[in-house]
Amino acid sequence: MPGGYLLIWADEDGGDPPGLHANFRLSAKGEQLLLVDTDARLNALRDSVSFGLVGPDIALGRTTAQPEELSPVPPTPGAANP
Image (tube, rainbow, N blue to C red; front, side, top):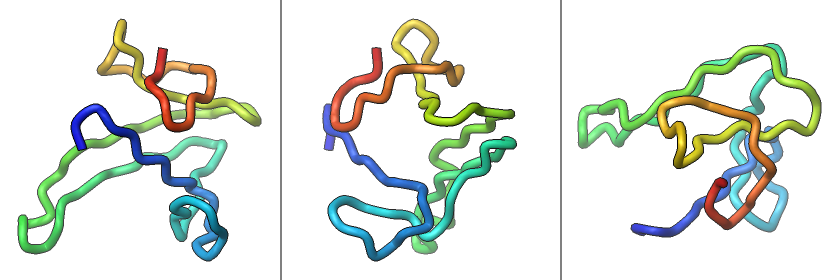
């Protein structure tokens, strides 16, 4: 939905309500995350991010000032990043 937000916890806890929980977690040592479309849409790459070493309780996000880069940001579940 345009202007909406979807929060998905990458915490490997798929059955823990509330919210959506992915069946994987991201490593603090760094990862690459790819968002791909459905098989019917030929699994087209929709977005991707790569990040290096991240400390505990650090959120990374895209800001309006630098939308192409990941930067440390305050967590903003359900709201726009700064």
